Length: 323
Image (cartoon, rainbow, N blue to C red):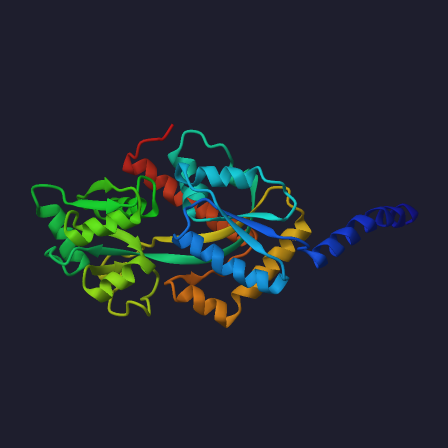
């Protein structure tokens, strides 16, 4: 018993320091590294969260955009940042769940170099076509791809993007004949779809909504479990005849490995508090995103499933491994 008491007394100061540190966190500015350019969906999600947390903490939350290398540059910067609780990565799927299968060697290990904090939001993928394409349903598009002499093209925002892999998953599940045309970003891909230079595109919901409303594109199916309030007339892939097809982009917060557990717990709790706020949810949902509900290890398991899913798609697609 004496040894037990002495042992508890020995660890008590460390525990109390952790509690005190968590209660006062943060005492200075917090940095969010975004491995994408300013103005994109991931950047927008980071800024909405930063503003909300800054109001709670009464401390500035600084966004640092570090694009390049398919998201690898910014992700490496976050992985090697001081693990003191004041730097976080706000990431989309690419660097964390896609690039490990797409690149032969990465300067970081998503599983070992980061601690999952929170899934902020998911963004459904929508299959759209140019209005002149003679297909008003998913079934008609499949017939078109199989009965034309030349494979129709589909656009994407780049090799390894969720747009690209969603189309490859679609091909894998249906046998559709489609030829990949990668672009340097989502905007030029959408522009060429509208102009009729490419007939098919899988794209994120926030980008699709205004184009569908303007009549410049036609939406055939949404890759979500249920219909979307923003596109109520567009069926899910299940309803359109392709059960089990789901694809989405997402945004999540990760901390560098070895960040103090008490700080990660405090950060997770504060993000969960923000995400339960109706005003915050409204801001996110206005962009077409669905607020996330996964935190800590549950978010980690989600990323593991995403890694396995897209790894299989990359292998079957024959996408070149990037050196």
